[in-house]
Length: 638
Image (cartoon, rainbow, N blue to C red; front, side, top):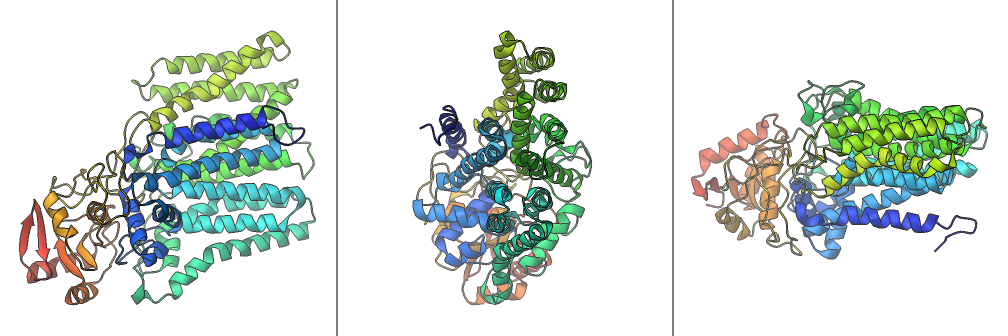
């Protein structure tokens, strides 16, 4: 139970307790959120019904169009659903397990450079970050992205110990697969990982450069094999790449999910369009991570992390080039500064939950900062560093808790008082053993109470829709798939506790996720379930696609309600020119589509594609409209 010889007796039990607490927090009452993000849940369902849909990340088992992200996260989640059946738990649990693994790997990474105490603080800080609790209980790709980036950081640290090209290459492979999870965002840590190895690897500069070139090659292979597969696969026998302008995964990476995110355009709305635009992150600028959109998601320990970085670098200024502790500070600090800087100034689509990518870096810096400042507390600079960390956290958490006036109104005063008390005691009482328990208690309360309270409140809420948010209020922003009432095709999918018709497994109790995607703007319609009449109609079809409708939101809801494939004309936003009118006519002539459902919607609010409007006009001109429930339906088989 104690672990390796020479390791303190508390370490292994404390680490196991941390992981057990994380598992409880991330798995408790998980299925209350139903399908969470039904856009990805529908793609997971399709992957259980079709091997090709699993490979390409198709939204439908008929393989008309993919989601607007590469399928890395869907590969993992779908494998879970294929093994254990498709239901609410198998949709959400993979992300929870990824979160537990990310906490464990953060602990191990920090432990190798700063000792077990720093690792425990870092892992706990990550586990209790509100946006981490949110995303590790939700089925967006960000959970796997964070796990893979932390894995890469662990490999980089291992490579630094003996200048190992093999460990560094493994880091490249991890980032490559992270690219296949969320594309360009995975690359934000690369400058820092490169710098850390150049600074601290214990070998010659020439060998360091060669090792980095090898790692770059490993990254290209790790991501490039799939990009090449998609580009070389005949387009006529695979689904259209959703979100791209020319049915290309490479264009998707460079455009909509690349430069479009940074600069706007390419299907991205402006993320920094004004201070009122909090649904997309608020105004651009250096204070964005502290603002009303991001602040309560991620910034609880952000001031402490920045202080720890500055103070830690000062306290290790005389360390040798290969010092692992300082390398760890550079690794986590560079990760934080580069990623937060890009998030703060990017002009394209951004959502507050993206900030989960900052949580491991913040945890790592706080853990390392506390440990080095405490060890060197005899020095004034160390005491100032630690005092500033706890005082800044107490003051800032007081501000954050005040933004939600009806949530634990007493807590902000406790956090503020603990921060002030701890700061004063740390400055003047470093040699007074009598105050040591008070110092430790005050430090723990000031650093942890605000974030922990908000994290617990996040776990206690259900989360659905395209823009989930953490905190004491349930979030479903961008969730609705339709605005026409109960008869509309958009909505939350199957009723609570009801499995999709034809799906493998049953849904656990709880409300199902409203139709959505994680990006593109998020539709703002109401949450309307498919009517029982429409569900019954589509459930009895035997064609390749039970129906076609405009936009992935409506299509995803219908798929979850019926277990049948539905074509999402125009993709997530409704703006993709797929399928074309000619292709749609051919499928209808071949008897592959049973119904066209009028009035579906996309998620981006950017207007319909020319293909969507052409198909609608053609259907209305050649088929007779009927009403099913309160939805207008055209029978394409008549």
